[in-house]
Image (cartoon, rainbow, N blue to C red; front, side, top):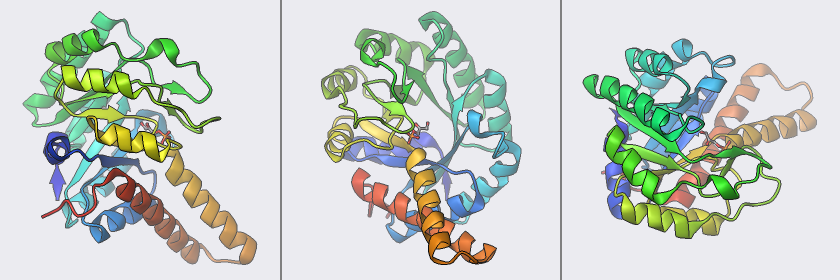
Length: 278
Ligand code: 13P
């Protein structure tokens, strides 16, 4: 069933687990992800980032995401990841997404507040939820020390914008990690104590099990995973083709579905969202 972000995160916030948010770029990706959630009775978020539009246009992906969510037996939130403008968020809302992220983390603080507020006003009028980001989640290899989310700023930001979930920077990075990162759990605890809304961890791929567990037990309710699924699918296709060089297209589609299912299932176990659907 199709649900909003705040609906899907409420129980996670109360009972200290995280709902996985998986970037899906194909029908195989979506099918595998939803199958994993249904088999494990877990809520799930399927999402698409604006940088992914060239390979997976939002207008084409939206009907697929929405139909997969509506016919599913588990709660599914359809989310825009890293929207870069008010206009992109408006298009996502018009297409039926139940949640949008406006990413103004690179803007000066006051500008981030102003544009996020504009997105929140627009989204709330349509019954849609909003995630926003404060602090910078870098790309692999970046120096992270001076870009952590500031606790006092986070309180002002949440109050001024009226968002439903806050993405924070605590040493997490997008993409392939060169070294396994060590997240700043102390900063997470401080942000969580100061703000009771659900917190979001971006850059989930490559995080250690210990850090995942510390995160979900201290306020992270949504964890974004993209690279791990793409890697998993590529790996399975490569293995299959090395064993069966003449493998046909349809069996390869099955390989993609099951690879997506396996990677998502692995994360559902890690995030402790298994058996959370009544
Ligand atoms: P990873 O590619 O590191 O899993 O990050 C995904 C993400 O944060 C999408 O917003």
